[in-house]
Length: 145
Image (cartoon, rainbow, N blue to C red; front, side, top):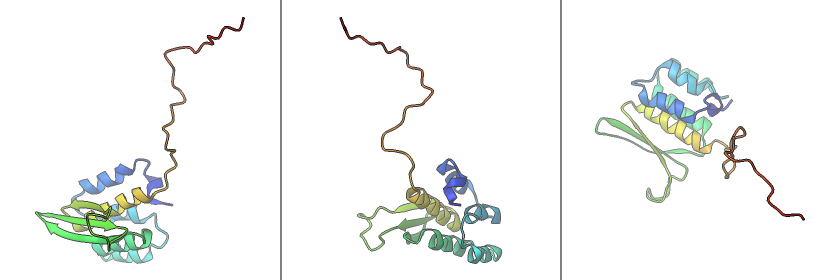
């Protein structure tokens, strides 16, 4: 079961990660639970290796994404994920998330990348609500006489 199918609003898990102060086994288990190849990640969680578990999750779930940069500046960790790491930074469309906790910054970037790669079931044209009540009644105005 993919990660985003459990959360109807893709921003919900991002908000929970952003508001968390530290990684807990329950928090990372909600993200990891959705993977099929989670035995290695579960071992890392059991040993409390949060950063390694988050990086392994990216490796298993999003192999097309790679860590572009992990940096610490001004009391916050910055994690940038990219599909084309070899491109100059100004040409690349990377995802960058910041958080005071390194594993939460990595997990936040993972969730954002997952949102971008999730298949969209919506069309390019917005649909009108089916229960819309128009303020007018359509009428035929042609003169057939």
